[in-house]
Length: 219
Image (cartoon, rainbow, N blue to C red):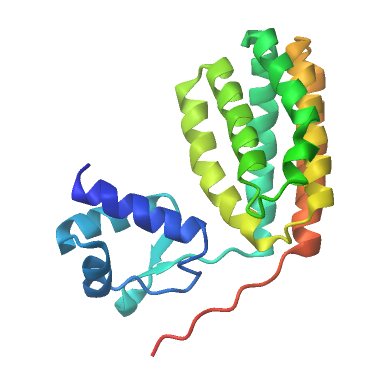
């Protein structure tokens, strides 16, 4: 892996997982030493992060991690509804019904994953990631997949703002199951409608339970 790719992957993960919080200054010397790369590949990595909207130039301070506001959340969900609704409809027309029937069965059993001893919910989030990947593959549209991939980076950050509520996750699993069932039944209108319902409930939950971040001080 190239040094710039390695630096990009580490920084991107640190930002998405909130180890680098909004407002954090990514000083070149400090990050170069931390990541074990020279400043040229680091600059390439920071350029990619800025293109994705995860960092931004801040005048003389260099590059900082971008903030997420309630207005940002509204705008991201507007885009999410457009993209994911259309993707679900296309998956219903183009996807393998048996694959989505299997996902439907697994999503119905998701409460077992949420009630286990996995505080990070890796099993559940892994299942949701497989469901997303199955829709992307069924749609078979590289441009839509690229747009969705970029959007999901920000959605993971937003998820970290919301309270990890097992009841909401159980409800979300049921909503995902309804989408999978509609796709398996080759019903594009129902798949899109089920996606809209899921996103509306997800947005309401995030806005009701999000906890504002505090910027770390920088002297």
